[in-house]
Image (tube, rainbow, N blue to C red):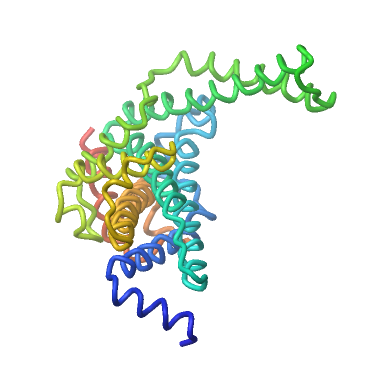
Length: 310
């Protein structure tokens, strides 16, 4: 062990909350490989049926893509946190970039919550309606981006190369057509992220992940709501959470609690995703941590039984 590691290890012994930050950051990093290589749905699985009957052609990227990208973002945020914490261990003086860490925890919580909200209903029509509602938000944002970009060019506020201008006009038309198709589908409103965070937390409480007892040790919806509010305050530059911190160790505790919440959300999102699109007999390589397998197996059975009873 070199001097830098020795000093950091000593600091973690003196301040156990710092040790929890480091351990949870490392745990989050184990999801990175999955985030880089999420699978397509195996034939015959819940998600394959959800995207069947050409449904994946009716919303951008299909239901699978609608939930996969947010979870990928969540795993990347957790991996980035570990990079920051690892760098902090070799810097003098220690600087753990708490605002950045807490903001990335918010990203993981919010992105994972969206995906869980979409996937959690036992009924296919509800999962599809939620996927359509979430996809609509992204399409509207994309349409507004290209519309604003073209208007700025036409009004002389910016200069787009001819090729870029033509591409933006094409994308604007394309997204308008996507919205026309979406309007023909059943949708559930997914605009309030704070509501999705709460609803996803309620689902996790009702379906506790088997790979961890962390959600059984607290009232998870309450903890999740509070941690999401704290993390959001750092994203928006609000200073009120600093009043909760009296000593440096209390900031480490705040970071450790936020990381714990982000981990639960993201691990549950990955597990629910895999439960719905993986055939355990496919023999393919799985990139999620092995510790998630008990949760994946239990949730796969939950949805298969619901489907078989229909």
